[in-house]
Length: 270
Image 1 (cartoon, rainbow, N blue to C red):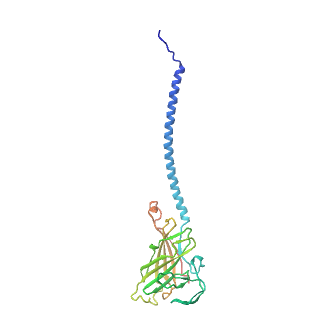
Image 2 (image 1 turned 120 degrees about the horizontal axis):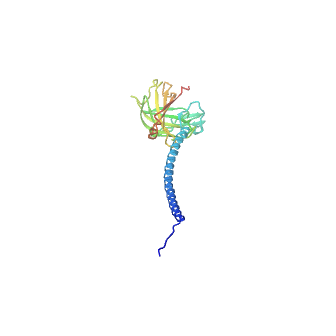
Image 3 (image 1 turned 90 degrees about the vertical axis):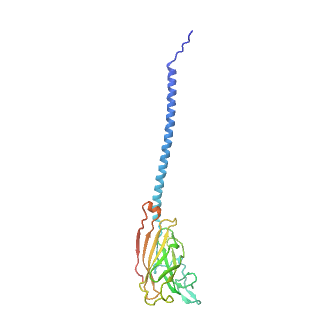
């Protein structure tokens, strides 16, 4: 006797529901994969945007903490970092003095007898075919200045090949000072004694490269040192300071640092 199976509507509904649930699960899995991919892409883009914003902020903050090296005014107060001496009595040596009230410091040229002079002034000395120069600089910026000693240059009449160059402090904190010391060949037919009355108006140009602590914001301070006397004693005064920003590969790629130049002008303070 044949068996007749009766399929009720409930069985069809169950099968259909199973298929629907399977489709929904598959759709959710696909949506999850898409969401993960979109989230990752969005995270990468957000990360890239954040890095770009960070670079902008770094440049903005860095500009606020830029170092700035300028000359020291001869009449300015003597800061403690200059190491000035007072009431110095020195009775020996070729540059002996009975009493020097100060403020004074000693020159620090290698192989040369120390000479006392005012730490706020530029020092120039001719001796044995050499020119000895020491120029003070003060950091009036808002960040630490790091000086590149190897890039220091000075040019001008009578000034020959530089044999010694250094800064007494390579890292110059804000509101503090350093000195650039140079020894160069004296260009003259008779180098033993410089001419007595031909130095007035002689102009030398000093270039001092420096940057901030991170090695960025590279700048060259260009100073004009002029003799205002008839002989080597001068006085020698800094009459002009120019600050030239130096373009780096990073600044060129971002369109910044294209060799901007700004000037700080000073007149003789004698």
